[in-house]
Amino acid sequence: MQVVGRELIDEFIKQHQDSERPLNRWLSHAQGSDWDNFTKLKETFGSADYYKGATIFDIGGNKFRLIARINYTTHRIVIDYVMTHQEYDQNRWKKKYEST
Image: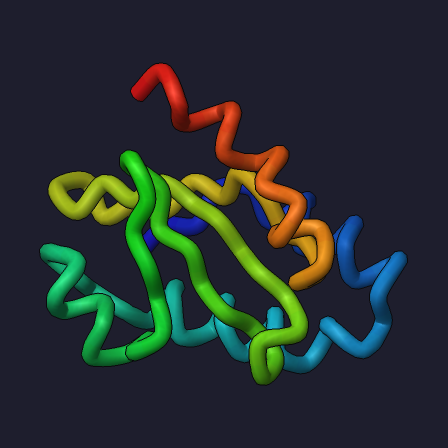
């Protein structure tokens, strides 16, 4: 899969250094995958969830969240958000997907 938005990961890591290892592990798995649907993705990331066009990944033992849109036809992941679990729980990120 091609991952777009790597700069969001890099910026997040600068602020949350403990996220570097788990986010780089996620990135490595994502780039090395060839999912063609959400069911296949769940075989790799069993805790992933789906919300109105977005896929939500639990990262680092549920400490962090990465939210992305995935096009299984073009094998492209577009990262929209990387955040702490606390930021995720505030649900502000949902506004982006409400009109979808």
